[in-house]
Length: 244
Length: 383
Image 1 (cartoon, rainbow over the protein chains, first blue to last red):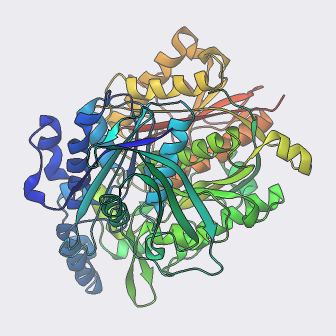
Image 2: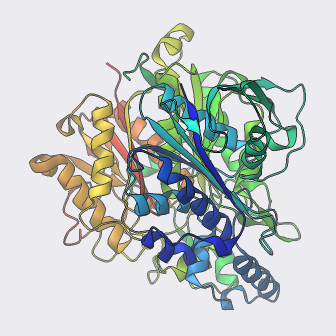
């Protein structure tokens, strides 16, 4: 049994949490999607029984980098066209804005996490893979709790559409804080489409929309059909839930 | 949960700076030859570092070079295993987002678009792994767990990377992680565990393994190249840029891989090390391997392929896995290219100069990623 017990969404950089101190100190090294993913994770961690031992799956942004890195790349390309690529200088901190597993590493450092950990890449639809991985881990009895976090942006040039989201799952039946009811994730169903469908690359948006659809739901079964543009374009994906 | 299925490798593919097939790759590794060279395009761009491990077989200049590299390795592995894409899952690591050389200048290539271009023909699951330098090894480990648990019969696993671009050369140089040119011998720029090591050399490449249940392989009459006996992972929980000096995070990872196999460190015959040639990383890894083996370490051969291949990032662990499979099959451990004078603190049973011909049956292949994410796969010769 896998139960959703807490979730959080972050959209603004000025809401970064003060604790844990180590995480706060490191925030400047991350791009905004990673900051927001970590901030959302920090919001749900208090609902966890043992953050150090839970399974953690982190989604890399589909749109990596940062406005600073984008501006540097534009300058480098311009310099390159004049044969002077090597004359450009990069702030080493900005290099980290493109490393894809930093949210996972930062979380581990901040919370002493050393259980199962996986960075899922920034390809469209990987959010549902991340969810599936956590379900497999919890159903297999390997861990009792699992965290899925994601951050992304729509446009790197100005960090438009930056969002972070985190979902905490448990094998123990506990009420989902936002509904006050137990929400069991029963299954994640896939069915191959006859032909590929267009997608929108955003690691966090799909999970946020799922939470939004769940919010008004009363007791009973709930089948959430993931919008085609939020899948990998290959499969229909349906989340099958039971709200107590 | 204990495994219901034994897991084997039934196909390998490799595209690297020293060879564009797995056989050519392995033969080159045994010679100790390095594929790292001074690259005219890096010299022309006036970069602070002008060496790298370029795959000559796939020319630079196409924006989809990452997909071409990956597909070559995937095609080779599937050919050996005699399987089609539609019959296997796909767990794959790609490099980071970057700009590729297009016909009209640099073209932005998100890593996810490379994965998406590769994934479509494959069966479920189609999962992309992002774990920096540990990604290729982690992808193989995830595939192993999928097959062992019975979720799939077979899975394509590995990684590809196409990050030998001016953008990453400048970025990694800013982090002071790269080996600068070494006089007139650019091929010796990367020197894992050596006293004169100065960092790594970026390279391109792809490594692919078909990971399959032993039962399935037997049913199909497929070749069994090696068994995957265990997988382990850990987090350093220490620092984003450097490992703990005592290698404790890496050691936990190695230990978990053998525990997953129901074995002990003494059962491991050899280690395929991550060692990239950085000052801090190699020291921590050597400490981890010594701690892992305890008093047995002087008799356990260790080699790193980075001196020959350079660091192929997400492909590194996958290429090293291809070599580990070859070691299990042949018993031969390749030498660490460019290692002549092991540094203080890097004491290990190094393989220097020529391959070591022993009856090696069990190889631990390890990758330690930036940020402290560690992964190790234990391969062994099938009984």
